[in-house]
Length: 140
Image (cartoon, rainbow, N blue to C red; front, side, top):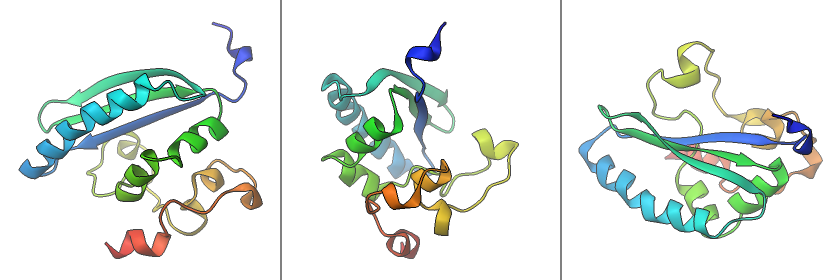
């Protein structure tokens, strides 16, 4: 496969692990919202794949391939996705050691690591304001 057509390709994994019975309802409620979002064919989304990480405990997710980070960020900051982003932080929060955390050190997404752009080493001045303030997220 020649990836030279996609020099800025971004692959993201998103998921939710159910930690309580109430979480099953939340997990199921995401299905139609995600399906609608993908069917809207956002600019820059090349492929969306649903994943099942485990049945017990329920842990489902998705893998998405985006043309570039700007396309992904533009989509994430538009409604209704912006609200989802503000309500659910998509880094390892309230998660047991799973995935990358099983073999790599876990560093809290605080300070300069709070921004996806800065975690990727992009220029600080080019980023829009966060979807949710760091102080507000960690106050919850």
